Length: 328
Image (cartoon, rainbow, N blue to C red):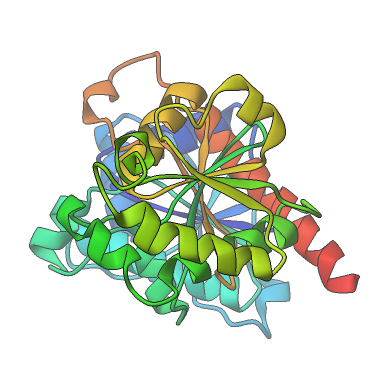
């Protein structure tokens, strides 16, 4: 059977579905299953004047997946009933995850979502893809890893209020476990034998030896000592504003920042929307484009497909790395 990739619908009113369809029509992707309510998809296709042939896949399990009828020249859709667009989004994540766990799909590519709509209409505690899959996968820790052209950038904390960052990194072994798992992911999923990691400080100028913040001294430095005792090659903390200088880019594999925007701002500047958001430390392979729903670009001819394509390619790469490392 082909190495199928699962693709979740995301926000069906955003640019994700347009990128998927256009990329498929250009024959740049194949062997995938789209998870969405069939009726919802048909409505959006009519609205957008897309004339596509769809192949509806009925409910299956691992035993009969070998007989699943995929049809070339059609978009293969696994359908279910949904009560709203937001319900469709969440169920797409759920079924996509299940197909990966059953090893029907080798990985999951999640199209961009509107978190605010899900929070308002489905789950007030929803914070994002990363946390959703960490929870459903029963993991205490996961890593948001931003990847582009062999550069890895990872924030220790993800979608939390800025005022809660210090509370989070102050938790016992939080920094240690995040970076320990990150190091393991770099080895297992990306096949980097001896990862070299550098971490930023939380405060400007990494706290200036405690003059403008004690977090580096109280939480980061002790964690780094423990990591080094466990054979993790890590340096820092260094000032976040100069961590990505040329010499560091040449000498380190992964750049760890303390909070979300501290990492995402330089990453998006470097990648120019060609990068991949990867969730490390899950039992499944999950990637997502490093852009949002971008309603303002729906009628534009200048939508970049590079991030989406890189997500698709990375799933295949990590799948091969995992198989190789499982044998060794």
